[in-house]
Image (cartoon, rainbow, N blue to C red; front, side, top):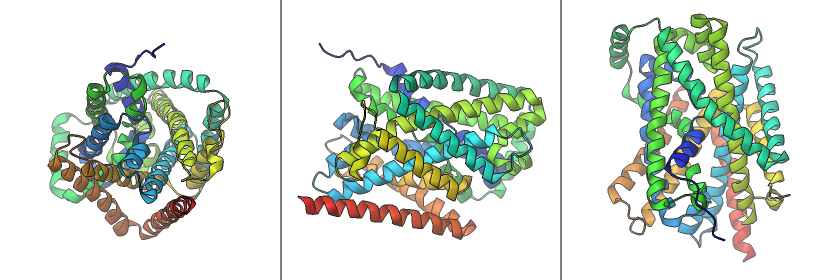
Length: 433
């Protein structure tokens, strides 16, 4: 009996939006305001353009290969004789997901304790974040069915809550649009263009997740049409959602409060405006959004991790499954994410995640350029996408060099470790032939 293709365009757009709208917007807001002031909503929305650069090659490769393995599978199939290419894309993709997992858990914790006297305790924030990661790891280890039911509830509920938060902030806004327009003009003249572009690049991690649509290629109707429609529509919608949330926050909450409480900026600001009700609404929305993102990331990325281990580019133990569940991979992802949280703060995790996914997206664009005639891709759009993604990566590194060289050194050490690991497994695979 032939499997029914039961995922139409609406369902696919929902999958993409659910994958993108995690804890990112709650995390990047305070940091963005500290860098570009009232221009933050526009800089965050501009991150959608960076996401479009990445999406172009994913769409073209997804339609051409129709492989649910997405990132890793595309690169491996484009460079079938290169162990190095397969190993590097596998390692960087998985650790990109691990960094976002850390980011979501850190945001969950920051908002979860924001109403208490110990809200500024970095140690407690990290401890709770690690506990949350393991809680969802156990849910994924327990049952795929149980995970799926929990995810369905959280994806739809978080979009409703985010809408309510935005409308409430706009209603209670202390700044009218005329005043905001004046402030924005002053910020525009005082803010270097490079700072705006850096914020757009740093916020790229908040758009990561659109490629989850490709993972469902075997269950979707008409993938040639629905993959591009779903991904491009979702990026536009998410950019609009982020813009509205950021704009409502900037209108309603003083910039100094957003900067001071950047780990839980929305909750602190909403409490000043609407009291306990506002704070609790934002906290509930943040916890819901990050919970959904943690759950979905663990589910999807652990299976990709097991598939990469099956191919010999990660330790074989990570390929072990029990009842179809890659239990060792889930456990390993939770452990590494916990270590990253213990070693770094919010900004380090955010920037490491954005750099990693920009690099992975750049490599996807390179792969698409190689077979651009087969994927029916525009040479100039592909080149422009490659340049945009590469420039975004360089801008974040430049910002790190200017603002925190110790943090940049730590990021470089992480990439050196990843590079050595990928090189080692590529070499072992080549020698085993």
